[in-house]
Image (cartoon, rainbow, N blue to C red; front, top):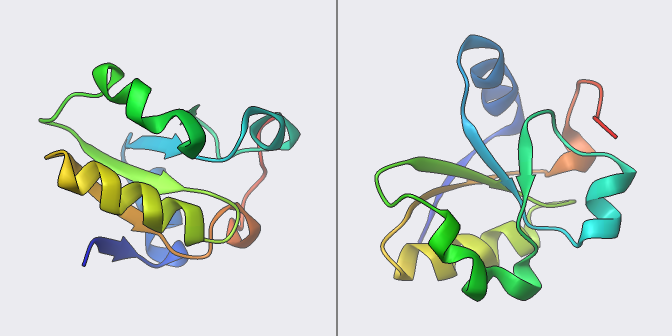
Length: 99
């Protein structure tokens, strides 16, 4: 089981410090609006993108509702990365989305 964080806690965390956020939605979804400072690494190509990640960092994974990010967390966790699933996804983000 991967770690998870509730949206309220995640939102407050992003206001307190800079965290590494990975948006695992497809590029067109990401362009429609994403959490500020999120990097887009779509789940469909995540296996090829692991070289861009540092195993020493904590990564917060987000999608639209939390299902794809949960799958991405399971995959990255199995590869030795420290990941946290953001519950509720961008649909629950209380702030302004970046376009």
